[in-house]
Image (tube, rainbow over all chains, first blue to last red; front, top):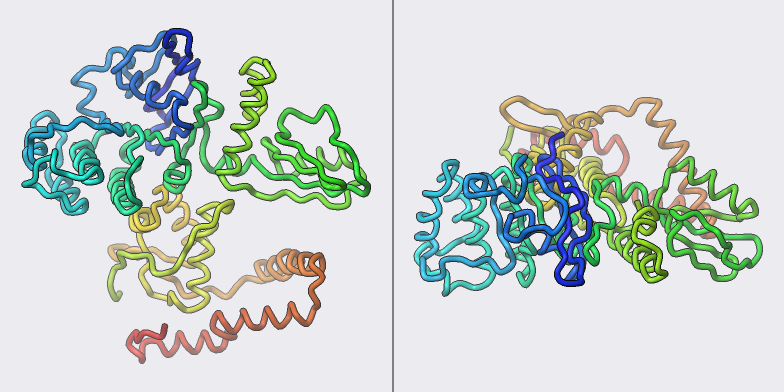
Length: 313
Length: 153
């Protein structure tokens, strides 16, 4: 499958801070790719580089087959970009703005435009500056979806919005998927996990993982081993066993490379006297926490970042 | 054909840690065995499922394809997807259910120290909940054209 976005060693340094540090990611065609990470992780910087608003200090990216530093007006006829603090022509009415933007996009779809206006309940005669935050975001969405772009890039589009507006916006997005590839950033996993197909986790500028949502839930399990006798935490555990802890006879860890047969064999070999071993599927949220903690432990123990990446990937 | 559906005709609250695919497939199957969805009833399109449940269109597609593949739904050209007449389970499927999944249930029950009688009475209560025995369901299906689609729940 073709990559709609593809980055290699994509990096941005501000002074002595690596805001984005050697990011390699690929967004396949038709994906809804969620870029998740805490505030300040570098999500907005990464997106601004992809949109050619700021320049990378190293590495490169291809967006719709074009080098991101060469993205110009023509390419933006096929890209929809909405950021958290989207600037809109505040003095215009909603209808006036749609009339105005319509002229820029050869692929503008009037039927879809009216459908979105209806679906979002947009007040065409009102000026943008008099709209609520949610309504402004809906207006921004309508004007970015109506030309059926090949790629939609959304930077924290749902932050500060009530769940009702958020649901309406998601419906608008799903309307265009999978013909349109969607790249969406969020600091809140819960708000995007149900409809995303791929997910990447960015922390302190580096991408801890990037993969298909279903693959991620498949390869993580919380393993609980009940031993015959109380035992201390074994040393030298495999790198893919995250967060090992013990209490008396119970040992628990997160397996980040789970495979039904191979893992059962591996764990049984390690603990031949185990009375019970259980493998429990984890919520995405706990998977993310386990990965984030593993990443932090590795960086704080002064190892280089590559080893932390290896542990979770 | 009665009408096309723009809503998801069964209830589902997503739980963490279980794949959305499995949860929606399960909710659909439950709606079908309990009679909430009956043979010939329209089943939501991929787009409707996706939009209403806010799930990825590919996941919605996989769900519908799976249910069609299992013989629970059938596609009718020009109409869409409708609930199929539930097939009699093959002997292989029966052995699977009566072997593997019953074993899991028994292991779990023994582990938790639940008595056999308790397990049996829970099973039987659940069985009644979902519309009684097979005879009753077959009867309900046969009665369906006569009651003109009246609401029963």
